[in-house]
Length: 515
Image (cartoon, rainbow, N blue to C red; front, side, top):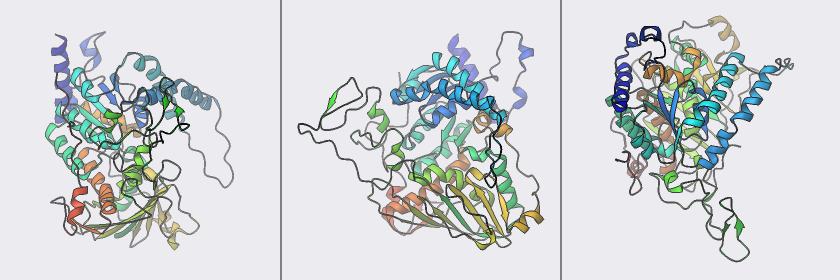
């Protein structure tokens, strides 16, 4: 009987999301006291909960988490154990009045309403969800055993996004995947196709796509505020100060006497290769990626700078910065891509890159040249900016025939230049719907319940991800590439096509284990 109820519940949620049947949501009072209708909460599994997944857990804690999964419960456990202290700090901040503004400095943004919601979510996660959610290390075991889940979020290292998301979608689960959506172009295409076939609610975790400011930026461009756009400059300071890049593959410790050291795992002594931490399953971390001996230079978090598992700065921040230009100008896929960089050894991404994309005309819209900069590189500042200085941490400049639009990371604070244009144009007409409370994760939950559509579904997210990853393809090819997007084919450099996708490590596939 229990399995029948679970199947019925999953069918309800899947059908509601596929049809947009908001009218099927039955009010609680119609069903009677003590009965929770299936539309009230989703049964969610979180896969990858120690890093950004912890934030997803907090933001989704109004839902019913039934299972959590992480390949390293040592790292994830320490992250989750900090919830109490973090909640105390947030409460202390709420108890204090806002500090007075400092002359000449921007005001410190602190949204008290959102902070109170976050505090309540953190406390619920700590006291209610974590004590009862079933814990796993292998996502395949979770998907095989947990018959009661409706939805899954994926916040693992980049290289495992696609295998896990595909396995979940094949089981009819709604899926939220952190950015970048995938590690390879081929995986992005596959996820978009499976999302269309399965009709589940999908969302990529580029939360800026749900901000009011981001939608305002798009509306400025589409209202013609800066005229015809042919040139775009986008930059981030990553990876500066966040994770290492431009380094060589680490060597194992020499096994000679005197080189041994104590390790964290059961006070063992390591000579030669590093001992894998006790609560880390390195084989599960590697997943579909090639076999590489464990080293603390790779995990946790530093995997983002290594080609085997991450896609560098453009994979980390491209979804938060390239997004709004693609969205507002309907850029589609580029026709050519060329990446310049500091030294690149093929295994660890360079310290800095500059990638030039050429996009062809789209209907009445002209061709566009988009240039990406990372690692501290910056574009030249247009004279129209006047005294405005580019924020080193990141932003985007869209150069039009009538003026310039500048926005910060996540699409925040869009403004027009010269200043006279901003003042004369005013606010553009609101054409895009606003996301309730700017809440990207709960927008996905509402879509899974059939109440709305997701802000950044895989159909769009896959194209954005493909553009980002083509910069990596050009970097690895070490030449300018000409790209046929319709065929997913590099036409001038055959070797570059091998970087569009890769074979999984032997013994690994996207399908879940079977009982």
